[in-house]
Length: 114
Image (cartoon, rainbow, N blue to C red):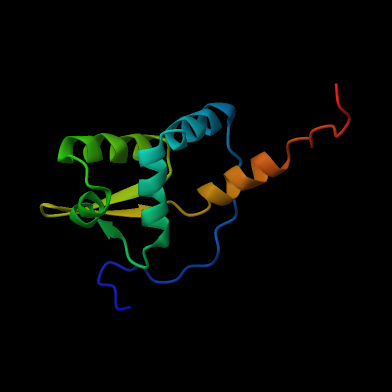
């Protein structure tokens, strides 16, 4: 797919270490089903996702979409690129990988019943 907003391919980013406050913000942002669905759409899109595309797909009010975008942006999960009156959403590189590493490092639950 030809993507006018596509960035040139960069070397894979090393997963950053996530401080406790950042992990908490990310998990809190992802706890909302609509925000998680929005993040999924951003992640699956080959190009940065336009807000109008996201709104049409999620069938939510513009103010609600704006709120969810701001929460994901504040948690450090997405970047918002503004070009004139248009806004495009893309994943921040390495953040989901760092979260997966953090969760993977948790001790496994004991298999013995209590």
